[in-house]
Image 1 (cartoon, rainbow, N blue to C red):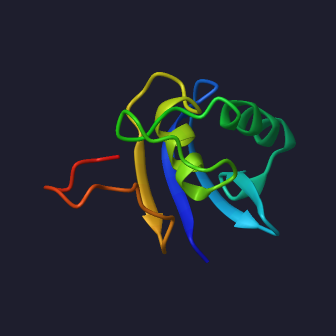
Image 2 (cartoon, rainbow, N blue to C red):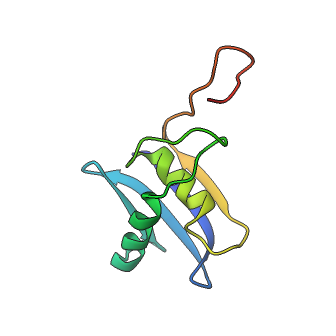
Length: 101
C-alpha cells in the first residue's frame, strides 16, 4: 500500500502522521491511531490544497494532494520530515528539460 509518512509539530506536539488511501478516501493516522478531529482538520485543509511545484494542483483526494497538505499546511510552523512509500503519483513535466507543469 502506498503511503506518506510525515513528522512535525501538530497542535504544539511532535507527531508522526501516516496518510494512505482506503476505499478511495484519504485517511490520516496520528502516532499510529485514527483521530477524527485530525481527520476533519486534514479534510478541510485538503479542500484548499496548495500547488505543488508552484503551479500544479493535484487531483482532489489523491496522495499527491495529501503530500501537498502535509508539506505545507497541516503541521504547525516547524521543520517537517516527509517521506513516501510506494507510488503516490508524479507531478507532470514537459518533455523539455524536465520543466515542471
